[in-house]
Length: 93
Figure 1 (cartoon, rainbow, N blue to C red):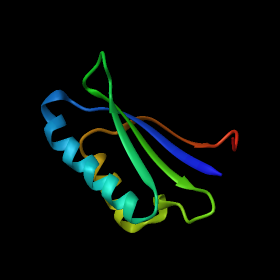
Figure 2: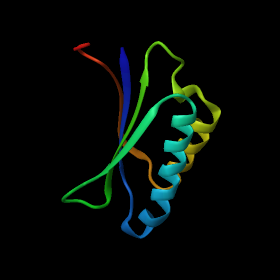
Figure 3: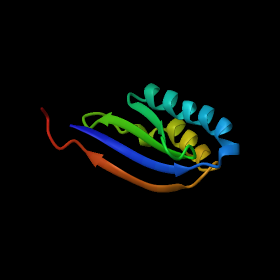
Figure 4: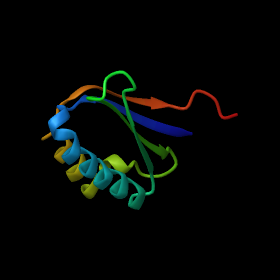
């Protein structure tokens, strides 16, 4: 079963040029820990970001990896999460 952490952030436009490379550090750390990560930007609100971290429930969550934890904590310096939640796959189709 797949699991997903979804996080929404509002990042000041003048900080987004620094936030984007910080997110890339998260993505790389997650991939090294065996997961996948994506980032979306609001179509109507360029200061809104939706972060996704995905992993297979059969493996250890990348959220427990020290490098991932450090990279995510760095994102918090740009903006605290507006919302975050963990999701699990509803179907295995």
